[in-house]
Image (cartoon, rainbow, N blue to C red; front, side):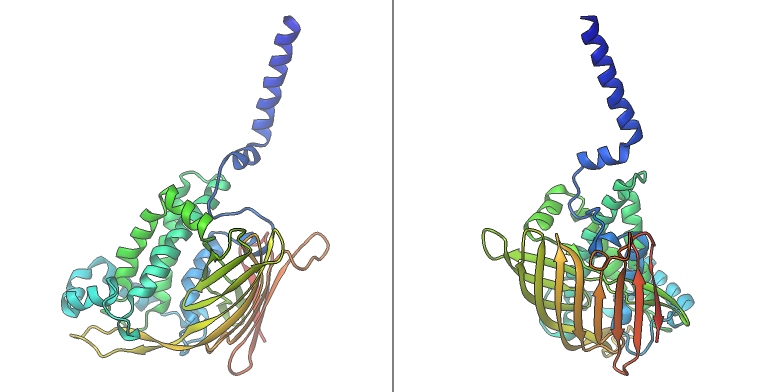
Length: 368
């Protein structure tokens, strides 16, 4: 009896020591995450708050063909003020623009014309994509034992949305209605929507919904954010074994394609569609400007492992990143390290190259 009691004490003590020494591993095994996958390969290996903010914030440079994505080409003072004034006092701006026009163009799909379809990216990017990123980043914080992870997940989501609107705004782009629904309507709804486990489970398990961002990097001559791109994907199964799927890829573009599982972990995908290659101002309405997009072709081929992107080659009719090759960590090994590499070429055949490592918060790039 005494020996049995001693054995139980020792067993409990060993479990306690294991919990103290390895709390992160044990808790991670007990928790279930819908979107964040702590794997050492592919796009998931580079996922962190810095890459999310930079990819999401500087994503508009893909369609701003009038400005190179250097730090000095962001109108920090004027654009920050413009966005802040728009989102803190939206009522007078919408009154001038017209509530019926605002609701019909920005909120509800009342027209399929590109000029009146600003609601489409609002739902796709800010409600669904942004909501998923909030949940995924909250799971990242939780995995790394950050207190109140869902608070910081929401804060990071708000930060990259605000930066996105600042980068997109011009020098004197006030007042405007474009940022109002993004920031005040669809962003909060996305955060609320993906706070429900049932919604997260459906998008994660049934649609394989995820983000496939590029390998964002900083360059220093000039100081710029390179290779930034915030993209989302979904795979809709076409058979019961889920080896064949309809592929949807969207960001400041939309692509449809076909995804085929090569084995239990790896998939190959081809897709084509249209991309935003620039902005075109619409007629000013009651002194309130707004924009629409200019459309160009796009196509890509993608290779992933367990829905973590390993490599991609993309052609897009955009100015700064016409051809883009991204090879993520997990493909090439240099000793104990597995770096990622990227190469992009613009319409003038200027090249940008870069390298990424999972141990670094952001990659390093250079314009050749």
